[in-house]
Image (tube, rainbow, N blue to C red; front, side, top):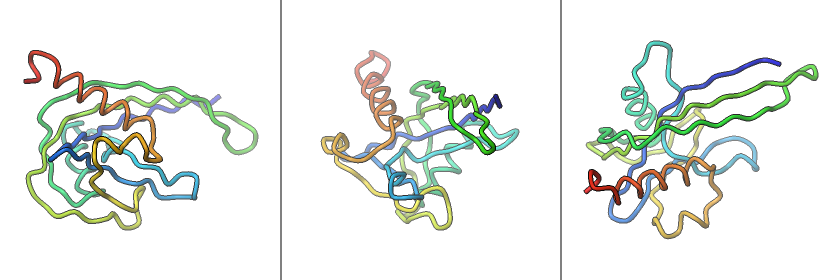
Amino acid sequence: MREELRVAAYAVCVRDGQLLLARLSGGEADMRWTLPGGGMEHGEDPYDTVIREAEEETGYEVEPVTLLGVDSIRRRYPRKLGTFADFHGLRLVYEARITGGTLRHEESGSTDRAAWHDLGAVGELARVGLVDVGLRLWRANKLSPSGD
């Protein structure tokens, strides 16, 4: 079985009661909303990764203000020729604020749309689990004494 490790950084951007999300591109079943972000390049700092990825996927310049937490996922999936991969994803989740730029959609990338969504309506969206993880970490940070 092939082992795969992916380290990625994501942004939770909340403004005026809305959450910024990017929609995954791909087949009909894959068109779910996710947090802006993605995989680190070799030698790249995760702080720089979240800035680069958020701009690529949404058009916004962001400033990470707090590392909310680290999420780890693991799954097994089939590969070519009847083999399997043991995938381990390590996801660093930052709270980030918008500092510039204009909302736009990514072209020819892993996402095809960016949009703001009311926090109360996020639960109704077709979304990946990372969105719920990010919101849970963000809310926990807001409730903690240091998250005032």
